[in-house]
Length: 105
Image (tube, rainbow, N blue to C red; front, side, top):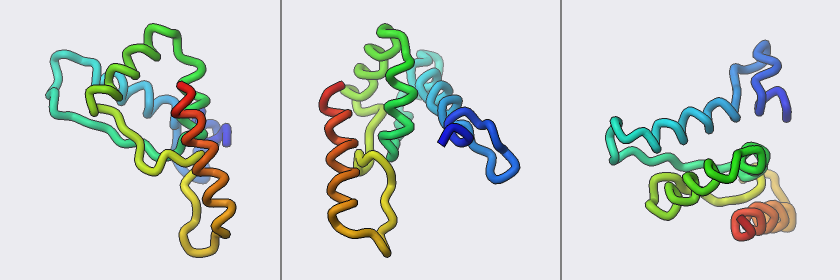
């Protein structure tokens, strides 16, 4: 998980989730850019790690973006489940976990 969140192992795949989220928020808050931009995010597990490390002022700015419809969640599950071979209880559990975090925050 850390290799994707922090971009620690780029020999497999180039990924740096925290940097992506930092840049997206910066662009959505930038008053000099197109105000029609939006961003939709899926995996709450990565989002929660990033969000809980934010200063409270940045959390408030993000909540404002969410209320304005500029930042949104698709599914809202803890992770994106496999649609072909997943048992329905696992799908329900991970979706409930992700929704619980989002509702709490």
